[in-house]
Image (cartoon, rainbow, N blue to C red; front, top):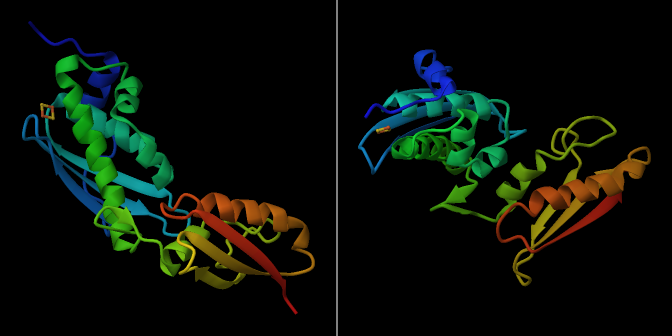
Length: 218
Ligand code: FES
């Protein structure tokens, strides 16, 4: 019996989006499916300050369903943060395609695994993870602080040169201490900055407590 596909699957298969290889990618991944032996390759451009996927392309050596799910995966991934991508599930791809026949669900699993693998490769290249685990050290904290914006200037804390000290407490496991330089005009934004720092750093596995202290610029 012939397999019945949705219109969206047919559209993405016949006119796939973002096919090919990116020039000078920040991450490349090739994944194979244990179920069928097919392969997929993604290349990505990721902004190291915002951790946003600015561009992504794919090449599939898989079936029509894999081409369609990879195509829709690149559409969903573009402009998203790496954390959003880590939260994607293969069902998000099949939902965006109005479903896939049950015998073809593994093709969407290959598409999503490849996408997440490219993000993992990037995190490894940035020194954010090792053997699948995020390393809690000053560099990791520094990178996560890249995403915290000073509402007064619109710059991130690194660009605004606001980070005075990062301390990973050795005696209290998972405790991180951050000292921030702040001007009189910026003081009213201190509670927002404090909250944003906590939110970002608490995403790092192993962080149990974040202490933020503000010091006035003289
Ligand atoms: Fe292999 Fe679809 S049958 S990816």
